[in-house]
Image 1 (tube, rainbow, N blue to C red):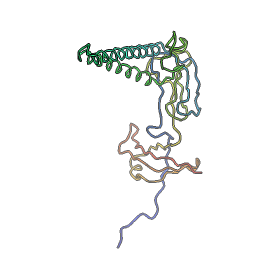
Image 2 (image 1 turned 60 degrees about the horizontal axis):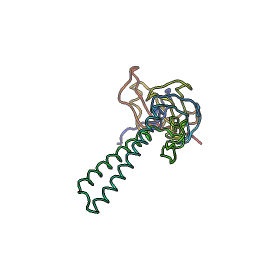
Image 3 (image 1 turned 30 degrees about the vertical axis):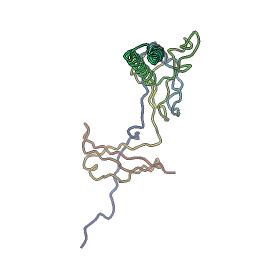
Image 4 (image 1 turned 180 degrees about the horizontal axis):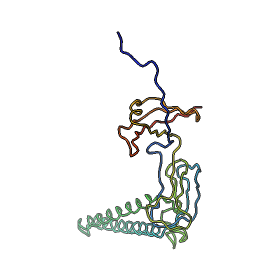
Length: 239
């Protein structure tokens, strides 16, 4: 006696949409209110991580850089005061309390510098001439590029959407570009619940017309508004 097993599995036919797994799609948004003045990557372009997508101009970005420079200058002055107070204390001319107060101000100023640097770096903009302070009568560099910079691709992928026309003003947070890493795709299949119940993780899905196969990675236990269940499967392209 033995357990009865199915001799041959029954194929199921279904329509599917090719999508990307979670974490392989990113949106590049406007870090500040401003406008795109130049588009350097179009729909369908393959870009590398760090590649320029377009030139972005924003007065708010210039203000952020100004505050960063002011914080850096204040930090250097506070450090100079601390060095002077430390020298006076070692000579026995001032009490230790003055050194402690000067050290607290220097540490607070350095904390402001880190906060300002984090804000500028988080914007994702590579400013013309860099963000470091330069020596000379104009420490901030060229005024023409002070509020202008390049938006960079956060990862390698294909540009699938460009949302903003050149010259149109956008608010902070507006989506400007969408990038997709197409090195790994998946089938997003929708089936009736009774058919979806026949599938399990590890089953094979094939698309003969595209010479592609996929392995089921997830079967939804819920249905959407159209009363269909969702099945996800990672695609393996045939050589």
